[in-house]
Image (cartoon, rainbow, N blue to C red; front, side, top):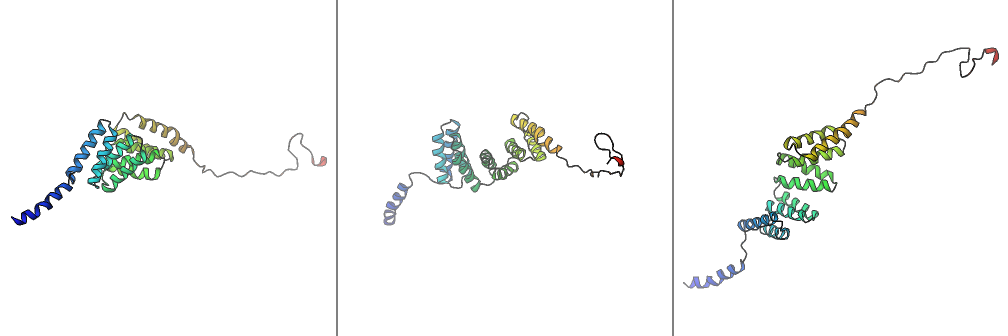
Length: 213
């Protein structure tokens, strides 16, 4: 009984310190609140809840991705990109974060990392046409006819109504592929001019006889 009385103040003190529940369950609750706020376009509330979710669980990839979406919806694309990269760092298999990071890098015209993240996205979420489309655009701007056409066709196979992919394919075929097809080097051996020895000058005007030179 005496031991119980001695432990009771310590138990009450610990309980008082844990006014906010921690752990995966609590992080999940904040994540769900963030998702609801995001769907309701209450972006400030979404950001607050996603931030709390990742604070409670720093390895919560989905919460980082949701935070990126909320930042992007409010035009804060650098913060959005950082959130997507944080999501990838803790959950590399999160294909939608790979796709989102690749798209933002593409919009910044930073095509090296854009291509890397988009390629990963095509293997992780092969049913999403968007990464194929952005890769098609990258290859089109790089003048890679076959690679660009292949990516656009894959995007259209997944979504035949993807108008941007249709336009990208048309532009690639009419601008990139057509111009690259005309750049053929001639394999013909140039012929040397032939010379004929004569005693009569046959230049312009009347021909002159040797006695008139």
